[in-house]
Length: 242
Ligand code: GDD
Ligand code: MN
Image 1: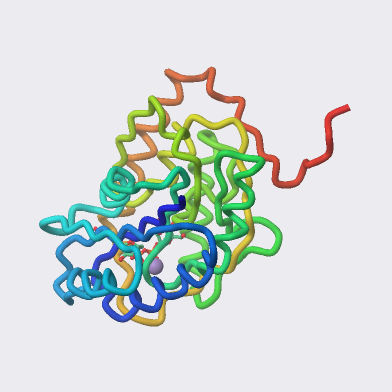
Image 2 (image 1 turned 180 degrees about the vertical axis):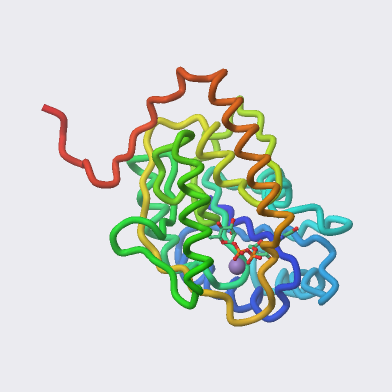
């Protein structure tokens, strides 16, 4: 079973469209959506509740805006699936990629939607945002060889979290898992990030500062766990070993 965790804050127009697209992408795969809403003032929480009558959806309501990364962690705790996926609610991540990500988990433990490999990219982003994103990723290079280390779109086998103490700060639950996770192979799959059509981004100065603090915590963790450096990409080296 596949659990797709969707963190929401003011996504009233986007959530119903997204949920419909997720289930149509999953097709025959047994799956559920776990919405984690932080008491959105626009009523996204109630809209999520209504979706329960039509789809296998769980809704977790938190008391206020407690942050994206911890919202996703709360989703993992309630999720029933052996495969866990994370996707933004604002349709920036195309759910049509889900079957490919899930298939990739036959050969790897972690599959990441990537803007920064051949075939990937972003649509509708001003140059300064792309520059900021590339710079943010550059700062993560000492931590992981994943090209889109700040991706918010990924799937993994639950065992990747076994024995791992996740302690994220701010936005980047993905980076936390990519760095600390218990996996030896990952796959990056290209996708085009679509800028949101409805609602506003919650990425602000505070979240950028949180990202820098998060990086410092992860650098320090990495220094204490240098042995976990053997994670391999199988994205482009599927050749059998001779
Ligand atoms: N529950 C909850 N609480 N959800 C939140 C919060 C929060 O405090 N903040 C944001 N979200 C939800 C949004 O409603 C959306 O579904 C998702 O998290 C991403 O938030 P956006 O505001 O749309 O972020 P972004 O588009 O600037 O950045 C996203 O895309 C990047 C590229 O993949 C994030 O997913 C980044 O982590 C990612 O790097
Ligand atoms: Mn977004």
